[in-house]
Every structure is written in C-alpha cells, then in structure tokens.
Image (cartoon, rainbow, N blue to C red; front, side, top):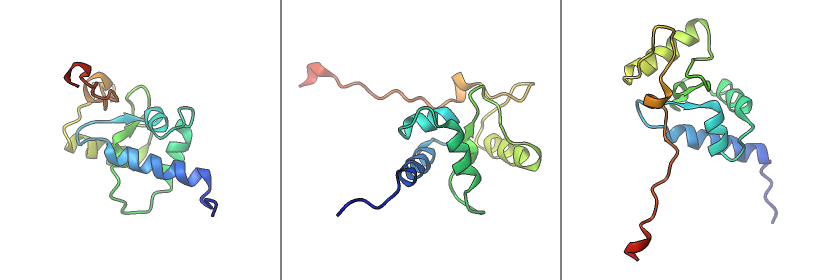
Length: 117
C-alpha cells in the first residue's frame, strides 16, 4: 500500500521534531532547522510552519531565530519571544542580537572512536 502522506507533511513533522530537540537555553536558526529536517533551502517554510502552530502549543517555537541572531517577529510577538528566551538564560546584546556562537545549538555529532572496536 503506497504512502498517502504528502511530502510536505513529512517535512512539517521533521521540522516540529527538530524544533522540539533544541535544548533549553539554546537557539537554532530557521535555516538550521530546515537543513536538519532535510531541506536546507526551506528556511521560509519553517517560518510558515511556525506561524500555523495552534494557540497554546507547547513546542519551543521561540528558540528559532534568524541567521543573524535576531528575532524576526515584531510588536507583542517579539516581546513574547524575547521574554521566553531570557527566561531560559539567553542574553541579547545592546542591539537586541543573540550571540549564536554562545547560544546557538551545535549540530556536530559525536565521532565514533574507531580504535575502541
């Protein structure tokens, strides 16, 4: 029986699972989430998926920022995201930018010790 799930649904699920994996006190970029979900050129689609989250979602959506470490939202949504990040210990510089070298979620995987076979 063929898989009837549209490919975009699979991408959406991978995006949600990837965002769920971003650790407390860390942030990831839209592009990073897209890449880890299997589509490195789909950063805007990640934003679209986040915009469609149901009200009251427990997904840590606020841990996703743009590639320069800025919050892309404006107004009350900006304040809500910034407050949530600050509550997790993430700090902003005087220009409102997050230091991605300090707070960015690393994507490196542990390497296997080949000599311990």
